[in-house]
Length: 130
Image (tube, helix red, strand yellow):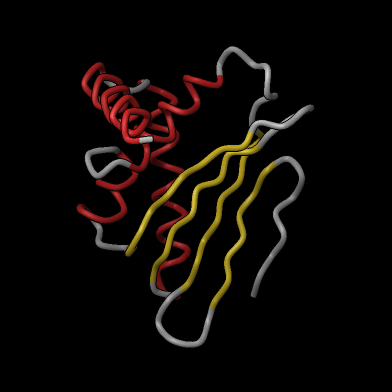
């Protein structure tokens, strides 16, 4: 079933016929003019890169998901951050638990210098490719 996330953030999933479910976790984001927007961009890159904590925890260590992505949208008053996972329907709850614990670890310890440096390099390379 598809559950709409509450306005403050939340989790929704959709099961489709077959062996795949889409899980989306949303969080409040930033205004367009917020000076923290570049940091949020780096955080998204850190979380979902193949060397990042979410990808490692969900794909490499547990094999729970097929794909992990993150993006954000800044709005005039508020924006949002969205994490999206693709996994088997039976893995939805465990994947959600891994996301929450991985995010909490990142909040507690912050990203490493290597994670920040790698994210910055990937972001710079993406800009050059435009």
